[in-house]
Amino acid sequence: MIAVTGIEELNNLRRKLKGPTGFVPTMGFLHEGHLSLVREARKHNQTVIVSIFVNPAQFGPSEDFQTYPKDIKHDLEILRKEGVDIVFTPSSEEMYPEDYSTWIEVAGLTEKLEGASRPGHFKGVATIVLKLLNITRPDVVYFGQKDAQQAIVIKHLVRDLNVPVNVIVMPTIRQPDGLALSSRNYYLSKEENEAATIIYKSLRLASKLYQNGERSPVKIKQAMTELIRSEPLVTIDDISIALPENLEELDIVNGQALVSLAVWIGKTRLIDNIIL
Ligand code: PAF
Image 1: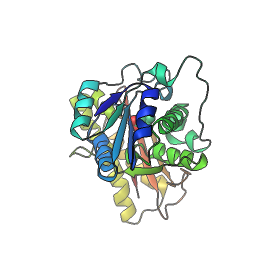
Image 2 (image 1 turned 180 degrees about the horizontal axis):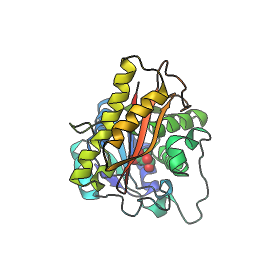
Image 3 (image 1 turned 90 degrees about the vertical axis):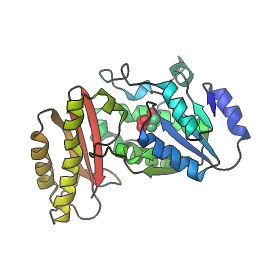
Image 4 (image 1 turned 120 degrees about the vertical axis):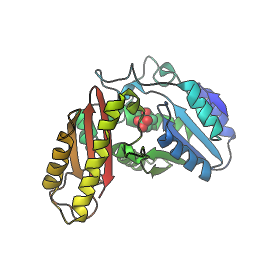
């Protein structure tokens, strides 16, 4: 495995690669969710590139950029074991030189859900992902379904800007108790981690109601809200039941619907979703 910090160096390496290349962009502090993407990439490509970069541009001023968990030594160890070929770990200065001034906005889609709670977040995500795709030039790029809106935004960006890459979205990986794996789970105390299991329980409740014939998003959201309120450590930030293609909120569920949830547990904001 080669670890690279410079764009120029990666470009030189990239030019020599033959056969399909898979790319997994990450912010590090890797868990089984990331590794499921890496393994999928390993299975289908001759070369696997992983990036580790905590992208300052996607954090709001009052968000957790400064405290975002890091363990680069451990990350490199696991990636080596997974048979990754190239790890790209650029500095902020490498990605955003002093006179940096170009930003990508995927209009509309990014004003909803996460974009409404975290203004500017997707501008940061779209910009860094396009930069990373331009630098690594993969055939396939892998994302996790846990960040459902991010995956939708990236697919839209790739289509709109004709980026020659295939976007694959892999299922959310969960703890045995249902909590979706996230680097931010690291912030939770043991008690908060237990409380956080209410997130997936409420999504499963939505799914059960739907299977029993409930089609009203208002009623499904109400039931989810009641369940989550039974857990005093958890506060709802947003519940949405929307069309997966464009994130338009639904008046009635008939056909596929993306149920997404964002909650606060202490100072930690967690998201999760399922498709009905
Ligand atoms: O999902 C993430 O970890 C990040 O948003 C990504 C895609 C690596 C961009 O910084």
